Length: 356
Image 1: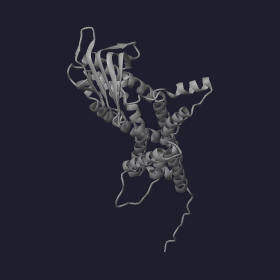
Image 2 (image 1 turned 90 degrees about the horizontal axis):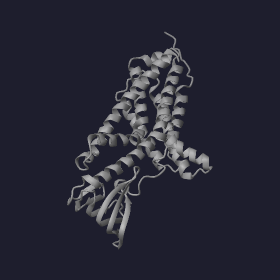
Image 3 (image 1 turned 180 degrees about the horizontal axis):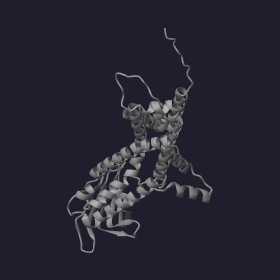
Image 4 (image 1 turned 180 degrees about the vertical axis):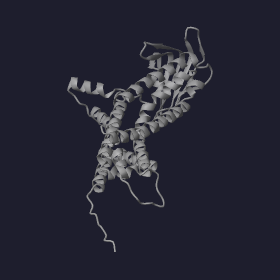
């Protein structure tokens, strides 16, 4: 690698990493503040709060990772423009080094984001589900205060009458309003939380399960014993999709072993691999916009950070509503960036004016 290529790549990567680190720390703090009821209400420690905030980071990091790469690249190019180094790069036939440095940063970004989307995110979602279930089980078995309504998760309220020394719960009541179509109410004379090491089960005895539909219809099922997973109270309605908590290596291995590529598996893999296209597209666009020196002095300039944010916002909007899939916006960024780069690199005629 040439010295100029190494210098530019290090400059681009340093700005992107610093911005990504700051963004991750700020988002982690925000997630901890949002989940502070783990400490104040659910009786857990600071370490549990910190771990829960950390496990929620991979899905969020996917959203702003390529934005940080684009902003870091744009800031570095703007600094080169201000110091007139960008002019020297172009005049001294260093455009190849500029391209190679951008490709190096984009390649590293693609590898990082694919590792994040294909492995770290599913692993974190699976660990987060287990942690939430553990917190809910601990809350029901030991932390929940008798004769006091407590919200386990938004939409789920629990109430117990008392707790015996052996962990037996008397007068158990749970109200689940997460589903707007159906309200579920669990009532039992006694309850107990048991676990097998991997999951937790709430054993309800001598009670009833009541359903109230949105149209006002009511039904009740009485039972002598009813077992329900604690994660049913700690997760969003319907629980987590199995594909969401399974990494791509396992999905591909299962498909190869069975010879069956389910459409939902293919769609999930395409969505995860599309994160790499976003990194390539944003790097190409930023290079096309800010990678060429200009002697103009515009009266009003839009900050490069705002330009990258607007590009990312437009890409997300197009990808969300496009019938062609979640990678539509990324492919459009690559297409427009390619056209812009070809246009800006076109040969120009040099006109020399004779001195009078």
